[in-house]
Length: 334
Image 1 (cartoon, helix red, strand yellow):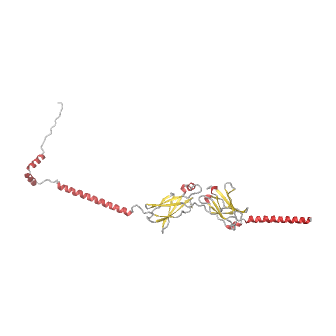
Image 2: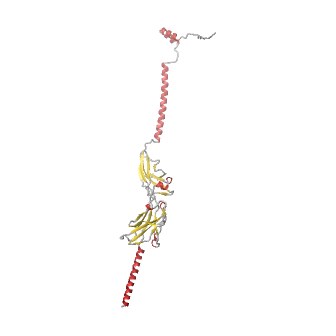
Image 3: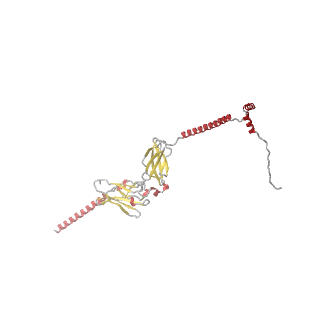
């Protein structure tokens, strides 16, 4: 009886031990089989920071949560998104522009967790393409995420045309950390303005002004414009949407019209000078014909005197110059 009881006890202990072993083995298998998030991408746009991922395979019918953490200057990981079902985590408010950070994310399934998927150490403004071979997913406990290059969003572009000129108005993208010129400096920001008409090649204009008048455009021709922002020597933003506008007619006079107007003006001045000269000349001749300077012939004078002696005598009297002597009187003491 005692043997039977002991045997029964041993059997129960054996079963319990076996169950415990099976249970531990099952939990271990589950823990080992919790898949990591797939296609983990680190995205930085407009100085924001976002970690995105896809759910593991064969988990579409299961509630899966994720935890994403950040390690900064404190050198310890701190949770930013905990037990969230979202497939992304926004770290923008937890990072500075020029700080160095490391992120990681893991899957949480029915109380168990997967391995961490970690990024490399990075700075927000210098994120580079560091894609790792996905064949390492099942071979290493800590994995590297796929980091997309940090980008600046496209600028906003508006076109206006007036009097044969087209103006491009550029607005910087709205950054999540300060503004573009405060971060990179005014002297480091350039706008690459590309414009073209249908069937022709693109022309590029580089400027630091956010308002630009496109040079040498033809009137009543449709032009398209695209703008990029150049910063930090060799980096550019995403290009803006292509905007098109028909250039208006010019109110300025053409060169041939100005030349013709100048020629006509010179001709009018020349004709006017000639006409004035002729008018003065013929007027003078007419005056001399009416009031000549020549004296009357003696025969004509005698004829006139015989006909009108009184008038001639009066004329001779008025024209006679009588001699006179000058008399001066001096007053003084002798």
